Length: 208
Image 1 (cartoon, rainbow, N blue to C red):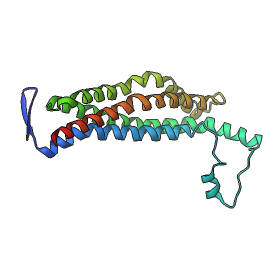
Image 2 (cartoon, rainbow, N blue to C red):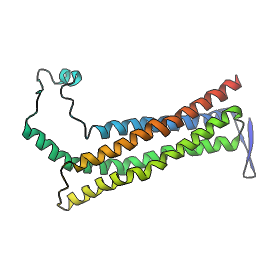
Image 3 (cartoon, one colour):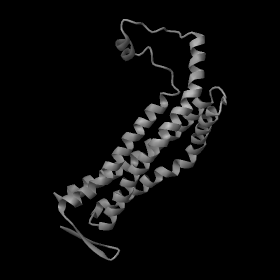
């Protein structure tokens, strides 16, 4: 049993509950990384060339063979379609996905705070602190993505009013969002995951 006093209130955690609390931040940051990877993959597909020449695509569409050089008319049609589809897709996707990001990061943040309040982490405490700081730092990138998010959502709304956005602008904005997101994923998100992983390994190794 582990007994801790938090805000003047004593609480007792059974070994299974304590173990779950110790592991929770790692589970949260693992989910954050998985979510971030899928966000990067899905948004990148909106502005990168179609991989119609890839071995996977060729094996799936057999016996049809893809063309090596798309016609100029097909390229123009694709660009026009992307200018309409990207703002609509991104607005719908972001409107739902952002709540998942907030929820997952809340699990990581508050479970890390819980571990620090309960105490008993020993040398692993510094790793939990590092994980908590970098988890919170995820949201420091918000101001950097606001312009691209606003731009795409405004394009979507203007299109619904019958307006037509600047050609290529949607691809430019989603590329901008993806670039910031990729930096965030490979820095604070990855460091948070690694920090909690190191903390958990150190904690349980000390119990053996």
